Length: 210
Image (cartoon, rainbow, N blue to C red):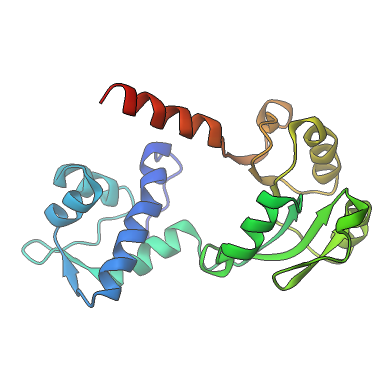
């Protein structure tokens, strides 16, 4: 596997889609796939598929295409899905609860080991295999466990204070649903922002202009 820090984010953001489609092909017991077929599934071109995969060293064979199992495993390694990063969830409201209960984190590179909320009424609630803890216990929990990432399912109004605490505890990676601009305040943080409103407005635009 070739490591290249100059790979564009547009390529990196396509990798999960490759991985998802390859998982589906493997479930259907398809053993190999051509760049043309992958391009058809991805709604792109065969040239784009080859360019994307060549960023990491290739993996295909001329006249044969790609081994579905091998390519799936290679992309799994590239994405780091075997790293089992330890994560905590901040915010056990409806949205945070749904994420904790319904996402298969162990297949996505993470182990969710703690959940915290500022609402005293939520303390002690079961959230899948976890028990909701008071957000006042975050420091004690992080002192006992090495935390790699925090998932923020909290309002923007409370995010700035919460991120300051987490950053002070050494947490540098965030899955951010709060709309708070973490990267502008902490340039060395690794942040994936999720804006559901933006996504829905994009759908609205596409429907309007279809």
